[in-house]
Length: 321
Image 1 (cartoon, rainbow, N blue to C red):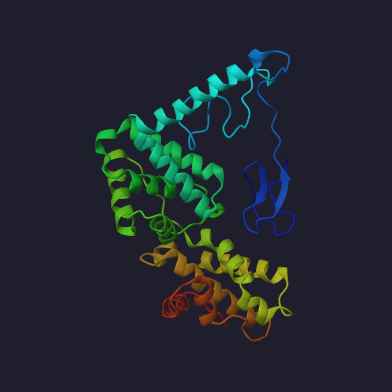
Image 2 (image 1 turned 180 degrees about the vertical axis):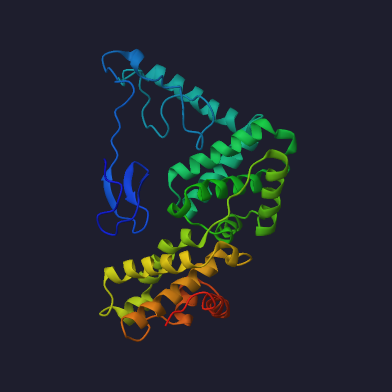
């Protein structure tokens, strides 16, 4: 694909999970098709991987017997095997599962199970979960003696993986902590911050700081899909309005230097920018604002006084009238 601009809004086109996607409006333009490096020959068993070679690093550790979650054991050519042989392999498979859970790798098994549960709870894509598992195993294998709390380490690895994807999965630190606490783990923001600081000092890993731009798409989607807004503005708003609101919010953010955003929560600042963008659109279109501070705060779960404070800070640098 030679197109580098979105046909709808003119934004830059990026490749995400095998698709060409606009970085501004999120429009999926086309799929990415890549020629395989090696063609598989179904008639040649050597061209296929052995059943015992597992590449997935989350729901299992190392080699295993047969495919994950398979109901019937098969041979290399995916044919049937005798009942006696199947019983023998099933017994070995069960013994292997017990060995994996209760030998020297039980910590790794337990932590990866926790990661799987958290990823399911937060509805994260599999590639974010797998990348977090990769980071955890890489750090664990290299710096085993320096790891004190493995649960907080996997939480930091998950945040690292999430923030590498930018606006694909803009989770907040509070949401990650809440997910761990829901499963009974004593994880809080302070512990994660302390673990991340140790990673930076001792291991050289740095947790990237989120920008307000990363939250805009998700927050506008939360507002547009809320029952409050649907009931209030069902006949006044079209899909194009939310696109305009996103572009206006990006425009306002570009006018505020990053230095002036220092010390402010990027999530709360993004909520205030959305409110400011709606007021700016209302002035340009000569109408009353459609969103109030109270509604934005309630939908996005932000304190109303925080939006008011950030909004007054924004108006120092941008004239909305």
